[in-house]
Length: 371
Image (tube, rainbow, N blue to C red; front, top):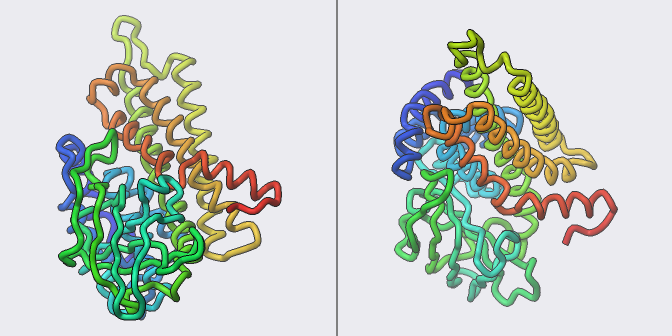
């Protein structure tokens, strides 16, 4: 069974429930169940662990199509992959096998109030050593909160001398010290359960990803490339869905008394053209980033930094254009465009935010240290 054959049933379920998920702000359980059964939770995981062994190019293609069907489901899927890849890099074979098979849904628990969008600098600090480590961390945004089976939790390593001496721990969702602190309510992505959480539990060195104090390196070297690529993919999947819906509307709706379509207006065509060009350029940049991550080169990190920011901003402009050319039909929810418009607003405020990434990109261009 190829990737598209695995994906089609998921898209059908996700699209069928997307409106209700958005309206009620509920977790898209039907789509997640379909993802578990599809084998796609193991898309990027090694075949020896039961995964499909695919890479960044396939990942971005799957995620863009999934975002076009349901933004909330696509974000849940992105965070699963973003959690699975560092776990795989740390050699936690049993957990990787569960994530590849669909038995375990994963997510990241990085963001904290004290460091805000600087997700790489946790404020919480683990205590103890060896098999006797106490983890207490209050996380402000955790996708799939209360629904995930596996959480990758960041914290400063015990006795850390600096803000970049951090650890990543694998924490099971059924751990009694794992609690959702509040319900989730947001402008967009209303079904992805991005609630604040509290992690108060005992962990051990066996639960750590990599050696003590290497969390920052893993976040930058493994998590950031996959997350930025995936987040950009979600943005452009939403943008394409909005633009295609807008083109369909302006090509069919019009003025009866003038015997003309909306697309007969030069101003409408110009906005559609600009949006289409913006999408094409952003997609090409994202595709190039996926290839760079698959086969790293000297400028790979530059692409990683630019991909999320460029895609996020393109999605803002494209979904805005789609709303404007469709007018009241989009504003009144007769079209699915306003949902994509709201969902697309999330990308640029997710850590690392677009503004932070532009700063990093500028530093990289100028030969300056990022941190």
